[in-house]
Amino acid sequence: MTVTSRRPRLIHLNGPSRVGKSTLARRYADEHPGTLMLDLDVLAGLIGGWQADFSAALEIARGHGREMAARHLRSGYDVVLPQLVTVHDREPDPAFEETTRLAGATYVEVALLVDDGEHHRRLSGKVPVTEVEAHVQAALEDANAGLVHKIRDHLAEYLAHRPRSIRIDTTGLGEDESYRRLLAALDAAEPA
Image 1 (cartoon, one colour):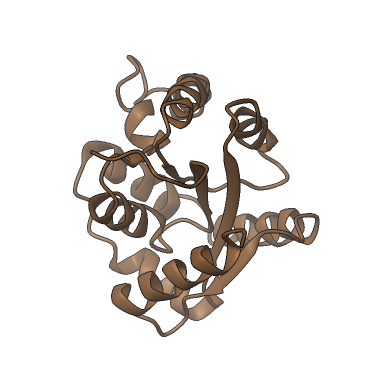
Image 2 (cartoon, rainbow, N blue to C red):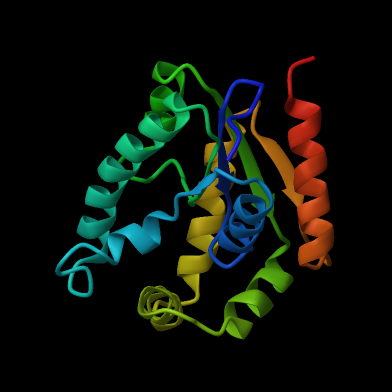
């Protein structure tokens, strides 16, 4: 594996549940050797008791994730973080941004967005692959319909205060086109 010649970067893929953050993060890591795909939901699933209190496990995973990200960035490699962050998170994630800065790396936030109708179709069409995915899917399905709107509203409020966040509308796009747009946005964000 080759360390990148540019400053390493933490690419934070933000966006609503089931918009494709983990899929695009995995693809990016697969095509960029040495990149750490840091899925905090997966890490939370490694914490004992996560089934009973996923939020508590996710908080622990965030702390471990920041440490992993810092070490990886300081080693000269990129990190891609597929994680929804909104204004109402207990820890609205300038923590990862600060971790990136302290590691001497570049933080890039990309918000993957989708219109309301397609978002609902993606939510209902998701087939969980892991136990953690099934747990999250069940929570989204068991909650009242207002939860999805609440998440989307909180994300919009968060992004209103994040003018440097890159926005990519994935409505009507498949994985390949969404990924192509992600790569183009990352190239455009790279300092000259």
